[in-house]
Length: 405
Image (cartoon, rainbow, N blue to C red; front, side, top):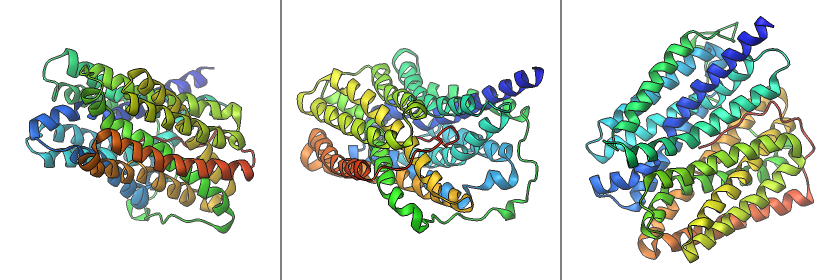
């Protein structure tokens, strides 16, 4: 009993460290408008600053996605916290636009190191037989941390002094505490190898995976793209089109999408992979339709509903996608296949978002948003129809890796 209690304590503490790291990746979201006023840059630049994060995530996934299997979980997570701290310092020192690019890139490196390593670490620290509960801890830490970032920054920016500094000071303090906690946790990789053993991972798709991978990747792409647009440009839409200038409200709207994704991911355990992917596609389509209505009629309740429905759809689709491709892969190729899925998913939070930024100038934010919605609706509809006609086999989802922007 004491051993179980100790195991759950360490599992929860590692989950808290995971959440702190993910908080930093979305912390700047409600602050972009203030940076626009300070540095006088366009909506396109906002989307590019946001998308630089994906470059860091994808780079780490390809170059060192399996590093924690070789050198151990704690060293990799300590590096991740180091990048998170460096990102916060960049935002604190921001006197020009280049600091924002550097901060977002470092934040992406941090998230890329944490996504796989921290999920595995949380699950390995749990007592035997606790895989399902540990998966809940990892899911809640990942998506909950992403949701708490804009909420924390929005509240501090609205109701506390130094809106462009205090959120990052608070995060630095949380990162410092996380380092202290991590150093007291048990290492779970017993046979560690030198750093030279880490090799770049080339995304790989064995023939038997390809039929499942296409629709799974399309649904993941749309889910992450929806999150990308919410996180990068929704505060601007709320301020300019809906006259909502309260940054706490802007942060809350973005946070709701991530919290809803947590609920969607947890629902996969009951719905099963075979149903969660098409259900996720349907919910994503509903979220896109609600967002289109919000843009057309300038209604805040529709923005909130689109965050909730789209968030649930993203959670269902992405965890279902990871489970589906993992089940279809051989054990010795699984990591490479999942890495390929993550690369496509994180491409979704960069390319479409920059496309929206490019269209804002000629056709306005609402028009750019509607073009984005139409394109994503076509992609997710095609994936959903394919999955209804050729459903994926049922799979065990409790051990699937989770993720988010």
